[in-house]
Length: 213
Length: 402
Image (tube, rainbow over all chains, first blue to last red; front, side, top):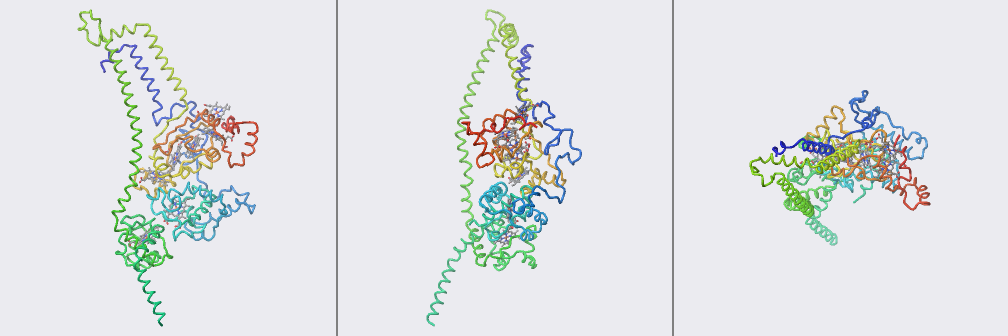
């Protein structure tokens, strides 16, 4: 083989070389770590601060690790429902009231949650259906479809209880809300992932599962 | 007096009868109770889940103790019972749930069930076999696929053979010297090839052909490269932690939204922070070096720096909630089968043409959305086709460009 190459004329050599170039250009896309050529690259690696972006070179000098996101200041409460709060009968108002109470309950204080928190959402069909949807997104892989503790992850995670068991079938609104928000025992806190409105809707659906045979 | 005696006698009789059947019936009720209440933390074998395996518990502990324990484990520990305290410490102070409402008979039923389970272990093992046997069944459906692949391979091999034969024949032509040349056999092979090659190369038809071929190839490569500028399709960078969607979203069926918390609510889908991983990895695979990286990140309060895969230029605006929540699109429409990917790869081009193309073809998800009712009504008045995204302004520059 190598002998063959030696005898190549200049012309065939250039043909060979150009085919190598062509092949390597065509195979550029196969390099998984290379995003490829970029025209106006600074449009992709933005100078403006995007929440999750990785800026190259011009990183954020104010925040640690060049992050563009920061945690909210401790103790602050989002005011997204603030205007509705004055309107007494709106669901947003009820939700804000409940939020303000819940945020003042410490993570270890299950008793206060049980005593003070009630679900601002009525158990209407639409609300329960919405709760089911959120349950399927956040809880089902551990607690299982019917709340029997038989989700796909439960086998590995272990210790996931049955909602309709004697110990859990009478848990009230506040207890379940507290469990989702701050965790309990082996279950860790899910409050950072789920909005408080969705947590309350999930509580409605868990009540359904507690009654299941 | 007589009557009373008979009553007493039947009572005794029925009591005996119930004692006889107690084992079977209680064990059945016990199974129900065990599965509902205890199975989350205890196995009926030796296996440790959250608490110890309960095999042989009736031999290990007196029945009174077990009843007291199940009614209120914390009280037993607090009472200073040495066995209980040692056990509690051995299991890292994991708290067992209290079951004050279980009657003594029910707890005995549970123990009867555990004892009954302990005997036929072999039967349980064979019972489990068919479940794992499901995988080979899937493999046999692959067998059909295999045949096609084999046939395709055979075809390719035949083609290669033909190509090789033609190369050999042309090479032998090259190597040939006119037979009347006496010193034909003296000229070395390669010199012969070179001389014949030169003859062919000077042939003008061959020259133009080769030139044409080269320009065509270079031209195609240039055009391909130009079209590829700014397109990251196929990009699948190595990540700082070998996180697998195939394992998490595929095998363990964790919903995308569990980790990508913003995907139905906001513009960005969000990448999970380490505390979300910890919801499971506080217990799962703690010793794995990849998981240790999560712990290190938390200890140092340092974010995990994932490498971004999908990235639109700053000039374009894309919103997830509009597409997933309002439009009802699946992740697979744009990202491909993420749940089957070991490493995330960008499957779509993310060009403007790609966005526009879909907006031309896709119906607006107007069902059950009162916001669109009037629009649909107006649209249906003078159009035959259904309401597409382009009809609600999905092609207007300002919708996607700030």
